Image (tube, rainbow, N blue to C red; front, side, top):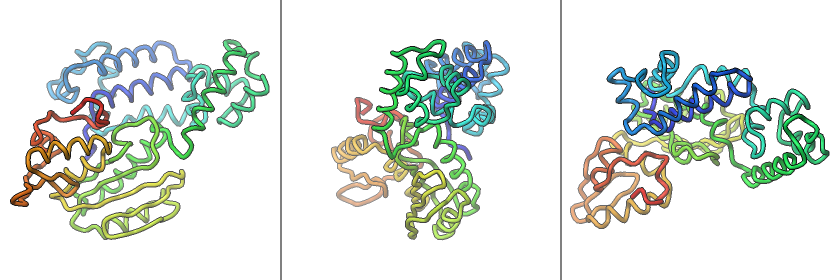
Length: 323
């Protein structure tokens, strides 16, 4: 079953569709998708509830066509149309568009006019003054591009969320299809939807962890197995990113998911809140300090409610005023 998506995640998918349509120089549609994305991003109500009462087409900027796309996103957590656009545009142009000083339209111009497909080619062209002669560019554009590239280099060893999220979702789906897996979710910085991630964290609940680990380490995307244990395994994918899988008992799943989602500072603040109530909080559950009895909860929402908090979306878990 696909993990429930929230308003921001849905809006992010629509914004990405708009960017790719803009790269392809499609008229009108980018504006429509951005208008719908903005409406959903600023919507006070949970879009899942809007869909349940069949009210998607009543949202600002959402007609029958985009409503169909929204239902697909809400049901599956992804959008086939977006994946199609990614294939058509190509990874190189998409990565260029992520660099400061460029954007979707300029990325396509650079690709079409100069054949630039990657950061190295872009940097060389900017240093050699080949970009300033293109329509819409100049010396200042070249300087801004070089600054953007320098900023990217400062993120060495990290991966763009947009490039790695589909990879992570595919692995999640493969594990979810195993009969012995009861629950599976993404965790860590990828679940918090950080712009760049260092690795992919996945958490599963299963009564047969050995079976899950065998399947995980044998996935076709895996290039190398770093370690394999009874509850945790780490692999390197063909793309170069590391994936860590943890398997827990079903009764520990929701507290483990909260713990492995992070962030570290958010978790520290939650533990302090639990201690103030005479409880201990860890990935293994919530226990009363005196009696050592577990306080049961069947969802993340239950965990936050026990601590006197509303549910906090993963994207906000940075200990920046959300608690």
